[in-house]
Amino acid sequence: MKSPFILIALLSISLFSCTKETPQVKHKSNMNSSRENLDIQVVNEEDPICHMKTAGFLKDTAVYKDKTYGFCSSYCKDEFKKNPENYAQK
Figure (cartoon, rainbow, N blue to C red):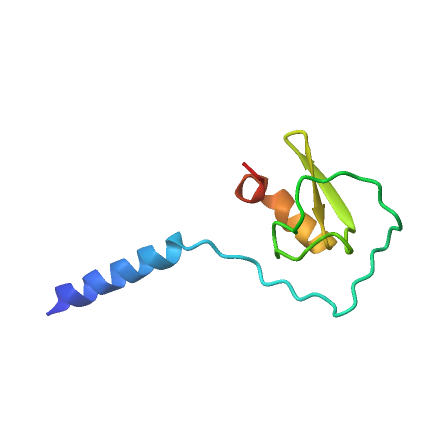
């Protein structure tokens, strides 16, 4: 009787530990870039953290393995820097 419950508990724990969590980022409804006319070539068209298009909102950049990545906010840039290999383009 106990073994099915133990098996279900162990499976649940392993499933939850294997899921990749995406940070929940709350952006302002009106995000204007703090820098004007950034003339920087980035390798991504959308923020790798929150998946927001960065074209009009590029505020921060980070370089990882000789590639420049653009981010919509410093929060997303900081999240990227914590574990860049999870978010970097292959």
